Every structure is written in structure tokens, then in C-alpha cells.
Image (cartoon, rainbow, N blue to C red; front, side, top):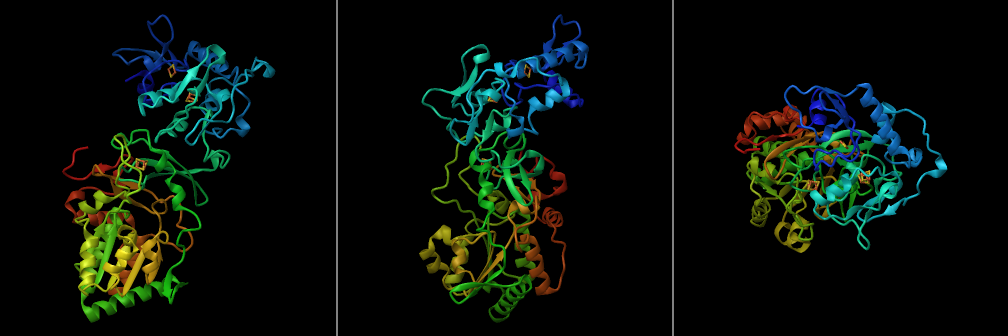
Amino acid sequence: MNLIQAAELLGIEIPHYCYHPGLSVVGNCRMCLVEVERAPKLQIACNTKVAEGMVVHTESPRVKNVQAAVLEFLLINHPIDCPICDQAGECKLQDYYMDYDRKPSRFPLGKKNKKGKALDIGSDIMLDQERCILCARCTRFFDEVTHTSELAIFERGDHCVVDTYPGRKVNNRYACNVVDICPVGALTEKDFRFRMRVWYLHRTPSVCGLCARGCAIDIDHHRGRIYRYKPRYNPHVNQWWICDEGRHSFVALQGEHRLTQPLVQSGERFAVESWEAALARATQKIRRCVQERGPNAVGALISAQASNEEIFALKRFFARTIGSVNVGAMSFSSADASPADTFLISADKNPNTRGLSALGLRLDGLGRLACAADQGELKLLVALRADPARALGQAEFMRVLGRLEDLILLDVAPSQTAHFATQLLPIAAYPEMDGSFTNCAGRVQRFHRAFDPPGQARPALEVIGKLEKMLDGVESDYSASAVFADLARAESAFHGLSLQDLGRFGAQLNGLAA
Ligand code: SF4
Ligand code: SF4
Ligand code: FES
């Protein structure tokens, strides 16, 4: 490892701009200079490998002096933008100035070089050339990770600028990662610009739910609202990166379209009712259906959008409380969904298809339930995060599931299936609950509740627990960690795992190598 990595392991900071562990070393910022005993000159820590017996000074007067000099040099032409810069609060130029320089400028304000500001360079990115410190992280990302090479450094000396090639724009599916790795406010996201000061944001570790890769992310939020997703390092899944589609997927999880109150079908419309009334109604329907037609008249359809805990809890509820064998699963991605690539993006737009199969559910559940409905066996269906009408088309849905007498939907927003539901129960989206997904490679990763669900929406585990209690009087612990503990005891693929011990990087299902 290099000296920056070695020092970090010991809790010692060596300031750096151009070095990034996911990119090649170029050694152009000189911020990481350190004193290595017996070396005649200061050495750049990013390009110096540790060696046996090496003695390194990171705080000697020579090092301190050069750190301040490098910062003064970088700041000569830097604009006084901090009060209006989106990077303020997480800017390495601000942070290092305070930690390693703190000297007033000797360069007259009026003599600073003028360069391009607020340039739309394509994708979701704005470029401010005056703020750029020419570390070349962004150009290396496009050269080495996406291999699209849209950005380059042009001109010479203090006229150097980062820019796109003439006539070209940034255009690739991972472009916004350069906003994360730009150490200053030169590259900002159009979507996030001027919307929130970063020091108001709270950060919660999570997992992207937009495709089966399950990239590790941080959710940055304020007062129950998500402002951005940022990639979170996971060496087994996404390293330092996420795709732009996943990055912006939180937009669909919040807004006016969310279900916020339990609804019951009333003629041609839906009427609002309380949770108590909705749960009593659902319980009564299930009980009557079982009494009159037997347990298999009640079925469940679980989608690959559900968490491991939700899948296990609903499956267990149907096995031990209702006694029905009609439990099926579906994993659906529409034909116009974005295609897979060879890097991260999966064609499967469900975060937990692998979890469904690891928990013993076959993905042809919709066909089997449709058959049971067609034969008149299945009368009441409980669907969890599932949209069979979208998967089948509305006409086909009516043909195969039109004989159902009751359809109780647990979902975050009205889907195409909602039109056919007799009850709609609003549940939490994954940023609003605790749980885990199993990604396409069999890695189980944990996500955390960032804030409460909107309105009266509740975690699905809580709803399943209440239904179970009202039906058989048994009260179980339906917290995500308790359900995961039961799941790990019951399902061999999860033996030995616990939600708490999944840690930052998750764990492989049993029998699967990392
Ligand atoms: S735009 Fe940012 S990442 Fe790119 S060279 Fe400039 S400072 Fe570095
Ligand atoms: S690759 Fe998939 S899981 Fe990763 S960020 Fe993109 S959509 Fe999300
Ligand atoms: S981090 Fe070493 S020279 Fe830039």
C-alpha cells in the first residue's frame, strides 16, 4: 500500500487531492508531500509504497511549510465562491485551508484569472472551471472506469481548464460519480445545486433498490425528504461507484403520489379509513374466507421489491396462521426498462429477486396463483409490493385474476393493480424502514430507516404482525432484526447471519463465495 493508505490505517491524515483509491496515481497536486528519512527531497505519499523500516514524518516543519505553500498556490486563482458554492461544508479546499494553511492571500483579487462558470457539460453535471484545482480525478474516471473519455485538460499553465472536447458532451450512465470524486465545487449536480446546504443533511447507510446489483449507498436527507444518494464503498458490490439512474431513483419514492392512508373500495371509488378499521376489515375477510372455503382460498403474492424480512414474515404468516399453500412470488422488469451493462447495471429491476429464491419461493408464483383463481380455489389475494396488472397487462389480469373476490394490496403508491384492489394498505418504502436485500450475487446487505414513512404509511412488517395478532391472538416481535433472526434459524441459506452483524459490506449467503 502507499503511504496515504498506511497512514490512514494508523489514524494519521495525509492531505491529498489527486489520489483516489479507485483511480491510477498521477501525483499532480503535490498536497501529499511528506518527509521520508534518508530521501533527499520530500516525497509524494500517494506514489510512495511503504517499505520495511521506512520512517516517515507527516508533521515536520518542512512538511507543514510545503502544505501551506501548495494551498497558497492552489488558491491563487480560486474564486471567492464559498458562500454560494454547493461544495461548501464538504470541500477539501476549505477543509485543508483551515487545517494546513490559514494565511491571508497575497494575491490581489482583481488579478485572478477568469474562466468558465456554470457550464452545462451534459448529463446532470455543471462545471465551474474557476473552482477546479486540476487534480484530473474526473478525466481519469472517464478514461479508466467508464472508458468514455469525455473530459480532458486543455491549455497550459494558469490557463489550464477542464473541459469537454469540441462538440461533445458528457454522456454515460455513470457520469455523476465525477461530482462525488471532485474534491472541490468545480463539478456539481444540476439536480442538487442550490437546494440544500450539506450541513443540514443527515446521512443514513442504505442499499439502492433500483436493480438487482444492490449498490451500497448513503441516503442524505433532511426532515423526511431525500436530497441525494451518494455511493457508499463496498468492495464486494460497487466499490466507490453507482449508476446515475440509481442515484436519481429516490425521486420516485417521494411526493404526492404516495399512498398515505388506508383505502377501501367503495363503489367506483376508494374511501379513506383508519388503520384499526382497515386491519379489522382485512382480518374479518380472511377469517370468513378460510371458514367458508378453506385455507387455500386465501393466497399471497410477494414481489422481489420486498425485503428479506418481509418475504419471510408474509410466507410464515400464511404457513402458520392461515395454513394456505397458495403463496407465490414474482420478479418483474418491464420491457422498456434500461438495459444491463457489463459494469454494475442489472437487467433485473428488482432489488431482491435472489432473496425470494433463497427463501424458497419460486418466481412463477403469479402463474400458479392465477391457475388457482381460475379454478375457483383462490378467492382472496394479499399482494405485497406486487403489481401483477402491470406484468400481465390489464386485460390479461382481468382474464386470469378477475374471479378473485378480494384483493388486498400492501404498497407504497397506487400501481396499475390498485384499480382492481378492494383494500389498499400504505406501507413504507425502503428508506423508511429497516431490513435487508440479497443482491444478484447472493450478498445480503442491510439498509436502515432514515426517517418515518409519510402520512399513516407503516412498515409492512408491522402490518403483517398486526394481522397475525388479530387472527390468532399471538403477538410476535416484528422488528426487522427479530424477523431476520427467525429467518436465519429457519432458512439454511441464511444460517449464522444476523442483521446487526451484516456490517457495512454485508455477507454472502451460505454456500456462495464472495
Ligand atoms: S473538475 Fe474537479 S475532479 Fe476534475 S480536475 Fe477539476 S478539481 Fe479535479
Ligand atoms: S447499478 Fe443498480 S443497484 Fe447500482 S446504483 Fe444503479 S440501479 Fe442502483
Ligand atoms: S495526492 Fe499525491 S500528488 Fe496529489
